[in-house]
Image (cartoon, rainbow, N blue to C red; front, side):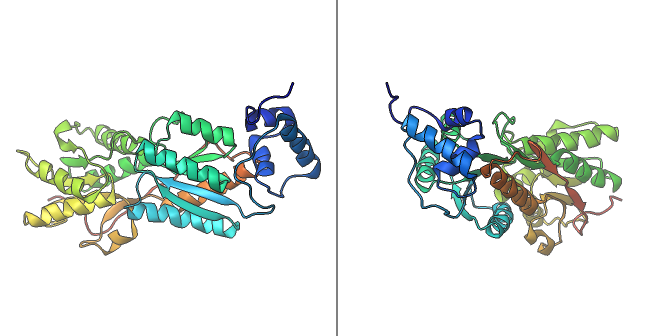
Length: 337
């Protein structure tokens, strides 16, 4: 008695064939980079189980990588795209960039589109997929790599990030070395691991220097300009305002500088400001911004190399990689006299 069509999953086919899920995916998608014996074994199992393939593609088709953001309205996203595209282009692969805006409807529509175009891999950036959609990726045999995982790395997928804790500590230690003791912090979204790590680095630097952590000096933000503007206003409204600000993103730091300017305050003469990311624009801000360089383009490159390796049935070099951050000192910070 034969099984009904498509009841068997690619994972089951891979188990029976004694190969990896990506290897089966490559055969299903018409890729040529599988040995003749392995291809024949997999094809026999696909026929035996009556597996219905996704939208068919011609043999030897170019690889295709999906790059998925929560939102695209940030120069931060552009740097990630730049890195992914460079590696994908060199490998002869195409890149499809999507934004799901944190909405389940958008994510489901994206999944329908992915099924139709038979993508070879997905790079997910600071976004969360519903468990059912993640399970669907597994069923389709599409490998996944996550850049800056939003929550605890529960997904069974390699992740690429940066040393956010060390970066937060370096930024705060820089301000402490300049004599600042009341250092305001404009935080990023608490749901993101990178945000929490930057805040933890800030706290650790203060504690290491024997400076009490004052929760009144920590205000919420969302990585965008407006929240930096609002956060700086809140900090300046304190009875004893800070002498320096550390914003968890460059965009928030630029928003904070504008809030200071509108109050007639000068950077760094009245307040020092540090950001995080080292976006191209901040070296041209007034004054040029001291910040923590996050290797965004390199993170994109590594994620692309990893997902392409997975698509070829290879194992990632490491399931979790953190690239080094670096403090870049410019003109927005000065000693407190």
